[in-house]
Image: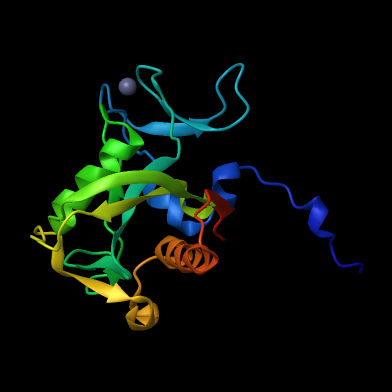
Length: 201
Ligand code: ZN
């Protein structure tokens, strides 16, 4: 018997083919009436949406923005050690989910204050990283630290400055943080900073 060609695989449930990381975001109950939802393709749409079996409400799910900064003091970069899951104890650039009512730069600044208590001046957008696998877009701005006073919030165990040769590359919390730091040090060696758009697998 001929092996079945991969192209003949059919997916009755497109969502079932999504990576596992996306599944926790699947909506089981209607946000309006609380009844059970089913995933079905609404009329005039082309992908399955959580649709309420009682009131018909359609729940759209879209990528989330994570916004943060690369805070710089001289030849050093500020990192925070996470006091929360996921990646408890690992190092990250200050970053978090964007809130309604703020711009990307405002969110990045807010996260920098909340997580590190750093006093910074926002600079240009530096990296835009698509993390399609988990339905997120991570945006990092460069930021100039105005002094070295720090006051890490409850989400951070500590915050401190690192020279490039001190960066704990094996203890970084997220691939987008690693990618952004690598790009930052590359650009700094070259003497000019660009805006980097990339996909993170
Ligand atoms: Zn409903």
